[in-house]
Length: 154
Image 1: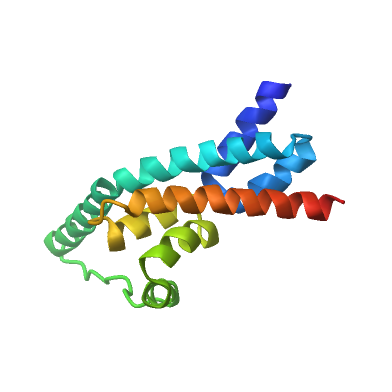
Image 2: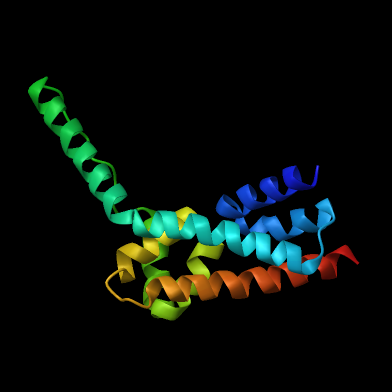
């Protein structure tokens, strides 16, 4: 029972980080258990997607090129997806307003850990300290989210 709950909370923290501390409170974990499990899950997910982001973006680009070539070969019209969507504009606005430190702390929290890590790597992956800042953001956000979950429990 205990390990099942730990595994569930760890898995939840890898994707839905913002909601995992509240779930930990519901499952009956104490503050430090929730904080450690959430940090571990989010860090695992963040590291995976941050360091694999180049591969994932390149793969997506190649897939789009292949689809375009197949459509041209078959004589079909290829309609490209919009690049300036509301979401993309929102992300660029966040990047311009918050800068490196803000985006490393906020984007993985607002979006999700995988998507946020890929976005941070895309914009700031060339800086060596970027992943460390994402990790610090995870630690800080896990602490205040866990505290908030305990406050609302009472």
